[in-house]
Amino acid sequence: MKKKIAVLTGGYTAEIDISLKSAVNVMNQLDTTKFDTYLIYIDAQKWVYIDAQKNEYPVNRNDFSITLNNQPIHFDCVVFFPLHGSPTEDGKIQGYFDMIGQKYVGCGVLEASLTFDKAATKKYLANSNVLMAKSKLYFNTEKIEAIIQHTQANLSLPLFVKPNKNGSSYGISKVNDWSELEAAIVKGFEFDNELIIEEFIAGREMSIGVYQLGGIVYSLHPTEIKSQNDFFDYKAKYLGESSEITPAEISDSLTKKLQEINIHVYKELGLKGYARIDYIMKGEEFYLLEANTTPGFTSESLLPQQLRYAQINIQDFFTQLIEERLLLK
Image (cartoon, rainbow, N blue to C red; front, side, top):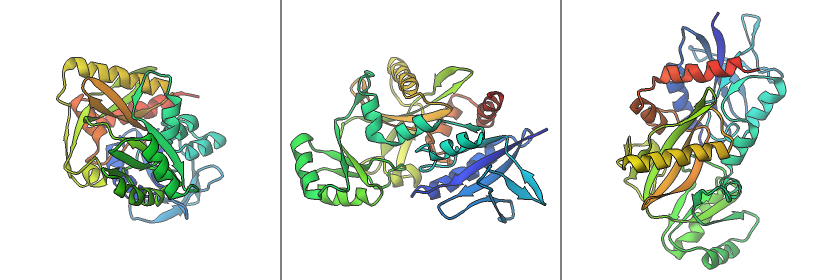
């Protein structure tokens, strides 16, 4: 008998549009000979199952079930590969599933909420021999003038100003001159009530997938990102304004070094399922940027590129992740 799999999309943040694009791709990749798939859309107003004819059926939030033809349907497993930002990357939906006993593929509450918080991730890894850019965390309760003064006293240009808990490069600015800092802070606070301001590291940007199956952690080959813009922003990520080289054109020894660092970071953060972790390569050193526990899975996304290079069938990859989770109590 085929297992019933709920595929989550939507979300509570600015990443809804990316989530919807990923959902189409993921639904097309799941093995329909093994799974009956159900697209579940959630946002702040509604949780609904959307069928092939775009009809909507409400989700019973007491047990995460739906009712079709007067018959309740419960799901064997939930995948949220296509659900970016909150409530998956911050761990909220995992907490809900844990409370009702619903199986799911991916990171749990602790590791998801930790990695969604860029500043907390840096603090957590401070003693793990992982190189990271110097940075400071600020809150929207602080006066902008005070943030500017503190930043000028503690950090050096150029800088990145980032919402501390957001993804897909929404709200990020690169600051090359102190006169640009105030506008960058205002922009960042439009997406989050916390900002992380960190020093720019000149180097080559690498993004590399990592996953766990059968208790073994595997690192894929890195992709080098060459943005046409000042950095890897939304347009570069999703509108084709970048070149992505998979595998990155670096030596075998540096590739192996990065893969070892990647596995180390994955284990230190206690991640599960798959993730994508971003780095800056400066000389022969790798500086951690951030870990993404629910990376994009659109046709333009990096992880599918890396799986294809490794000759890993994406459908088989999803099947293994789901079936392994179904076996766990």
